[in-house]
Length: 446
Image (cartoon, rainbow, N blue to C red; front, top):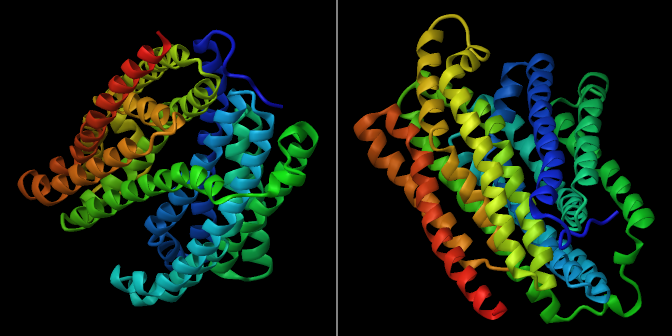
């Protein structure tokens, strides 16, 4: 079922669109916790380390997949908002063709490059083979991940965030269900953990296709809709590839910062890792409001309702900003308690204190992050790619400055300021671009 985001009061539409996204993100974090528990408990410390050390590579691949497929789907959202039924079907065909090309290239490059990357990362010899097995299987399943990402993003951009969340939840539940079978019964080790992810997505893809056939038959291409031109591919990849690249840039920034943290010793590294677990949940509302604005702006841009986009941005900033302030206050007052959940024993007090500092510094700046997500996703929904990419580069630069300069001067505290610095650096070009775009739109309207 589609949802027209071009009619009705923007605040209510954005709110109801965002709530299922927040629920889905929370579920995803719970899955990550259970997945880590299964691997650690059943396969041992070495297996857990092997899977864990590939986390940055998985983040790169997942970010590239989700960013690219989201960009491809936004073109369909624009045409849906414009009421162009033929354009929507043609966009669906183009999205599928572009995704297949993208998946083939990404799979080939990643599978061939992984052994060299693991060597450059100085992966410990005792876990190298398990790490290689896990990430190569994960990379080989890229086409499955791309198709799943495309289908859920298409459903979401057509205004149905609830079904997209249900499909994500189904994939995660199936993943958890398959892991004991592959690991305990079939004895496939870390390979079983990787295969469980792919199998879960395969069943969810089938569910997505069934849903589209039953509820969204109007978007299914037929006949001449499959006559895809070079211009069709360009129009979609022009938005999809830069969004994927932006996620890659952000991932690179986290890797650079991790290298700097590794130089500070095990306690700061452990504190940072645990604090990031807390933050990954804390920033979910801001991420979800940003995703909602991508769909909202894409549909209203296609419909030519430009003033509604500006109104939606204002309402989204109020709602997301309110969440960010509340979460910041919660982390400031309860940061130590949240950190104590993750650590105990020797050095626990030091780890908790380091983590509290991180959560306090970042939590006080969450309002900046909330505005960043709103503006970045809004501009992407409008089809703009250059400025969000520049913002991603600024984020990488600021994190690198913090890693190689502030960490040397202030140690762990310098690392804590890396994210707020990155957010400010990224928000500056986004704010200028949005201000200029708004003025241009209003001139066109008048």
